[in-house]
Image (cartoon, rainbow, N blue to C red; front, side):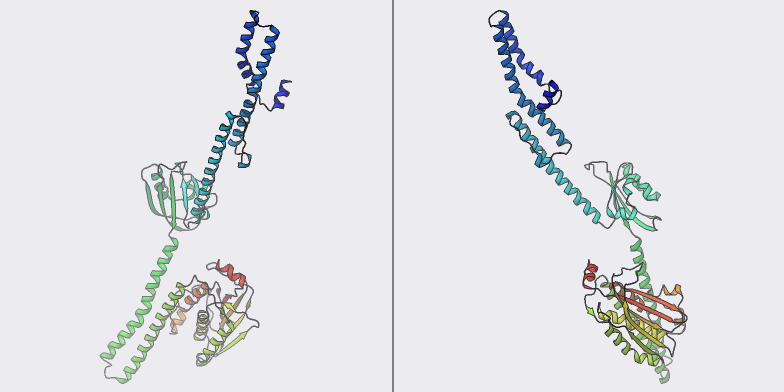
Amino acid sequence: MFEKSRKSLGFEKNTQFVERVLFLSFPTALVFVTLSAFNLVDPILAIISMAAVVLFNIALLFPLTFELQQIKKYVGKMAKGEISDDDLISLSEEETKELIAAINNMHHFWTQKADVLEAQTISDTAVLDSLPDPIMVIDRSGNILGANLSARAAFGKKIADKNIDKVFHSNNFINAVSRVLNKESTSENLVFYVEEPIDQKLYAHIKQLPWISKGKAVAVISIYDLTKSLKIEKMQSDFVANASHELRTPLSVISGFVETLQTSAKDDPEAQQKFLQIIATQAEYMANLIENLLSLSRIELNQDELPQDNVNPIKIVEDVAKSMEIKAQQNDMKIHLIKEENIPDIRADAQQIKQIVQNLTDNAIKYGTTGTEVTIRINNAEHIPPSKTIKTAKGKAVAISVNNKGPKISSDKLARLTERFYRLQEHKDKNIKGTGLGLAIAKHIIIRHQGNLTVNSNGYNGTTFTIYLPVFAKESAEDASL
């Protein structure tokens, strides 16, 4: 009976409601018992009065006890995170009104604090993930507590579940981390090598976190990949060395013949004419080399800027074929132009595309077999062949190929054709002039256009260079610019 009454009233067990009522009623009951004992009050009247006092106490304590129970349930749900701003309650008793108002204010305050902290955490995470270099936070044991997007991409998505010595197999690096964790040093900087997942030269900055930082994190590690920088430095060094070498040879020739003209050939008109012709040839070679170097620098400067002009590729190949006819005739060769129908315009830099086609055609004539044809073909392509080293655009493309019937080029040499200053030994043996920069220039122009360059060479069909240039329909052009 009492259990059903308790549940129907919404009381929990152990509320001590009955004890409180009896405790408040006890003094009054003692008074009435004493008065009845001395016959000062009729016993029946005393019992009725006592019952009235008990009922009064029940009426007085019930709302307060009930609302205290509501507060208890409310705070319990709030502690579990089950209360939202729409679930806030208000009570009627004066004693509990201020209490529940204070609890609601506290809930609102900590909710705001939690929102600010969550927003700050998301913001900090976004900032760290946007950094290009790997960053990791470790605890006193060297366990990785957190890593930004670059670190997860470089060393694995589950990097946060590992100890630092399981990620980097370098004794020098592990020893540097240990010195910081053991407070032997506040920071460490070192360069070290790793072999997995690929050979890399890395620079690490290991720094103790300040004592005011909370949580298990005690140090932060920043990693910088020096591999690409070193390759660029080597390329620049090789470029300067090669350029110096290429310029030194014609300068030496010019200097030698000038000295000869000033001395032994001073009064020899025939020798003077011969030597001046050689000097003019070497000066022309130097001028072409310098022009190509400047052209390569300009192209590299704008390599990341996508061209925005609509260009007619048919007109380009026609202009090139026409301009190279005389040179082809001088080598007893012909230029054969093949055009597919419905060739669309392309989004390109007309001058640069013309430079590529003209360079490829000039090479085809220069290195082709006398008495053969140079074929320039332009046609539609469904897609650009993918490349492992450069970014290529998606969608349809225009393919321009230049073929000559020269000797076969071996596959190991084909892979080096776009290197700066690289020239085939057989061409040098035949004293065929060239700077070795034409195909390097073509490569960088292709990179800027997000196209591709392929080379095929065999004994029966000669060598074919094909450049693929994206059409860049309106929608794909927008995608490419993102």
